[in-house]
Length: 221
Image (tube, rainbow, N blue to C red; front, top):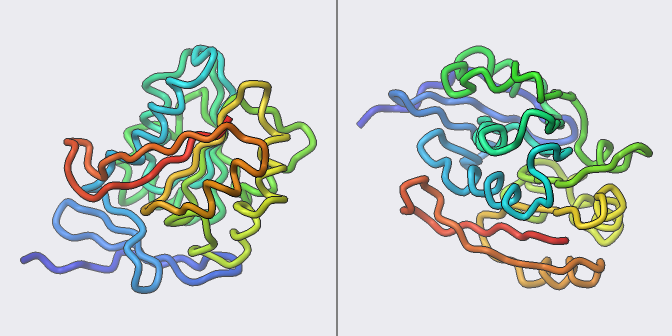
């Protein structure tokens, strides 16, 4: 069995340290003892994009915010569906993640960072959501393993009633807030409903071949 090789590490502002590993042709990003993502499992991250786009009124010209670049699965899947007039803002808190995407994981990125529809901002996605001019057709969040601040404690505010109110205010009428999670969370579903969203919870497989663990995506309008 091939062993993991540590490629690089990066501090998370206000949180722990991310580590990038390679095992054969697989890449893994870990936080402490938690494996946050693997290049072998992209299905649910791709579904976050494609299922969100399917719920948009006009994917051809949509304004989308993606919170957390990760390994780029969500961004690439969104670009494959969105039209030429669409714009995608990617808010990534850890600049090293983008460096990894342009460096050791450039093959995975497949040029998506250089797509003219894409703007990369090194920023807290919560601040991007709360910006006065924020007006998105869709906000896609995959910055933790669920609706709690795993990556850093400050992320709890994203999923709080106040954070959800800001997300709702940043959406255009009929806009979609989509949140990825490794597991269900009934209390978060209730929190979304209490925030005034119409909520749909969907179970998706971790792998693009329809296998692997079941993950959860909330679609809130």
